[in-house]
Length: 129
Image (cartoon, rainbow, N blue to C red; front, side, top):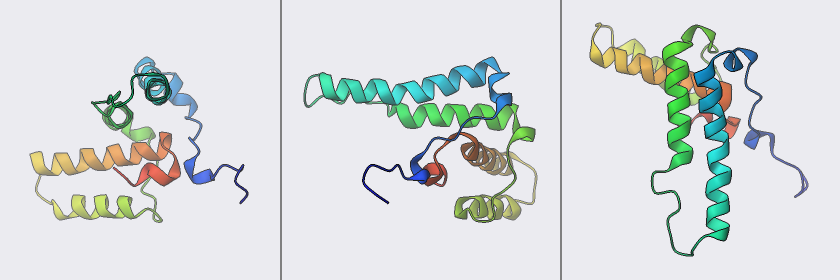
């Protein structure tokens, strides 16, 4: 790969059409994509030595979108990816929690939020959460 080529693992996927049918999805996605540009600009043009993103906005906006997708659109998310180690870990955690209750609910929710990342995050970052 030449230096001017973009690694496909860093490419943001094109969101599926159903995401644009939901106003909250569209808003959360736009915010997530725009926040990185805003922070990068502040880091280049703002005062040196200042933390221009003390709340880690890039990560928190991704988490917010993933939580929304898992809660409201679980039936539209992809199946577990057999090639994804994080998918396998979430499946194992859910399988270990046989009894219904808050802990199992948490495992299912976290697994759904991870599946959501397969929809909107670059492949190299999907497994981080």
